[in-house]
Length: 103
Image 1 (cartoon, rainbow, N blue to C red):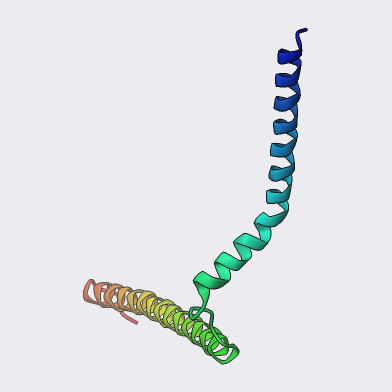
Image 2 (image 1 turned 180 degrees about the horizontal axis):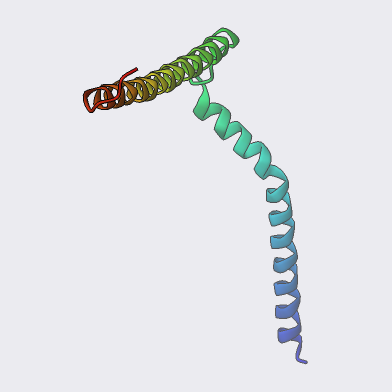
């Protein structure tokens, strides 16, 4: 192999090694870079402990409200079903009374 080709290969090998070292260094730095970027972006948007407590309580209150609404609907439907059963019984009683049944 001629000396020019050899020196070119050596230069390419050194450049490849340098690139690998830069990639390794960058791989080590990426978590810190991302963490700093997120921290800068979120500054002013992160809730305080008092605000987080308020949000938790608001979510809990909303969940209780949903549960109460669901219970009211279930009880109302159950009441309607029982009213329909009682109404059907009264209609049946009146029907058989009108057609000759004597209690």
